Length: 576
Ligand code: ADP
Ligand code: TPW
Ligand code: MG
Image (cartoon, rainbow, N blue to C red; front, side):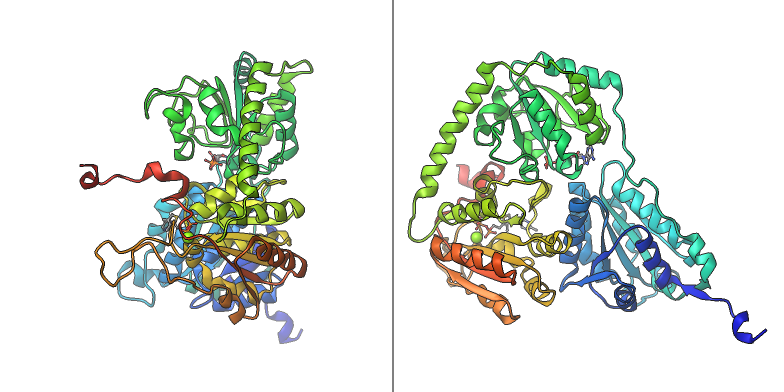
């Protein structure tokens, strides 16, 4: 026997982390290298995983989060310790808020030094800081526990209500060696990570009874419905029931926005009028005026409008969070919708014609009004004339992904640009957070392989703009369109003191954002007319080259806070 054959084959923390991720079908890592994870990023790539390296961790984190939304598998963000970890934390908190499954993996410094606060390199008690901002947080100290740590992180991210998970991997763990066979045996391939949750039959009956008696029923589809990937059954439920529906922003396209039952263009009519509302994966949060108040026909801003709610949600504590839920239906959306469909039987009566025709009438009137506005061609361009181009481009390319952030740039895009397929519209979500743009765009391209169109307010773009280098480096088919009005909401504000500083809400006038893309070898275009914008977007889709179009629009076209003006506190001084 030679000495060689006596030597046991070894593995280490680095390889166990990589093997555990691969074993669980994870193939893309969004991150930013440095101590102590530099070698991990190299090894991940060497082992055949795709490593997308960003310029700031927040953008990597946003990419991971939206990859989770698109695929139903946890998106992985990898960062260095303290500052890198903190940069990723905003995205982790945002993912949790939006119910997107993601895992933030951060390297950390030596526990012994951190716990005694002896001043290690990038010292921070990361686990404690992450805990209140995510669904679950774990730390792995021993190589033989890596399999369990990653399994628990995956289950926590995707089971029940999805969300963000923090996984703390101290520097020392990566170098720990162990017997390769024992290491392999310690890894866990997670079986059924997001188990179906079947609704109780009596809860299904309660919901159907309520729906059956409704005179003016309405269905609300939220991003939970988009996430659930139960597209065919959701469409069947809407169509079989004959009930008008409203998609929330990221549920647009679950059924094509041009569907005859879509009540989007009659939103302010159907919300106060409806008598029974079926919520599918949508929370009654601020985006739905907390389910009460004038939006819902209530007498004042807090009064209940009289609607009876049925709520499908995987979280049993979501019901009654704002108003009474008559019929909570707790379970996964696929199972709940299938149960409703089965319970409706073959002779389900569609809603009264008075209701559906009143909705259609209101809708047709508003659609006609919008068509008139879109047909105008003012100089300079405004939101309508430029977004009417984007509307045509998405219609011609329904598989393209649409990323969207800003205030007016967000609200106008949401209402003007129709979506035709599920999970194609990715935006600022529950928090209305700025900065998701380029991270989402990168992940949208990487995960789908489809062209990506990012419609960005000029302010919004600034939060993640440096990632145009990342887009160029990976040669991603991303077309960024900046709705450039020289500022936050508008570009025409002045400093009321008459001083030399500009207003806090405006930017450099005539900024040439397109040159940013050119700096890294991409295509930059200055567009001042809808025709120029159309040509540049068509070229970008055709060529799949990284493109940034600086769409110059009227700096006075926007309104403060876009559509959510009512949430601005009014100054007592101003009121007087
Ligand atoms: P929107 O902003 O579009 O209204 P929300 O983020 O407020 O949507 O609501 C999404 C809801 O969907 C959350 O309450 C979440 O618990 C729920 N949800 C997410 N995935 C599923 C699923 N697979 N089954 C059931 N409910 C889900
Ligand atoms: C992380 C507050 C909401 S919208 C917005 C800001 C700064 C920018 C609006 O200007 P933009 O769009 O993008 O040019 P437009 O078309 O109206 O001119 N910081 C964070 N999130 C939010 N939401 C803000 C600040 C905000
Ligand atoms: Mg702007």
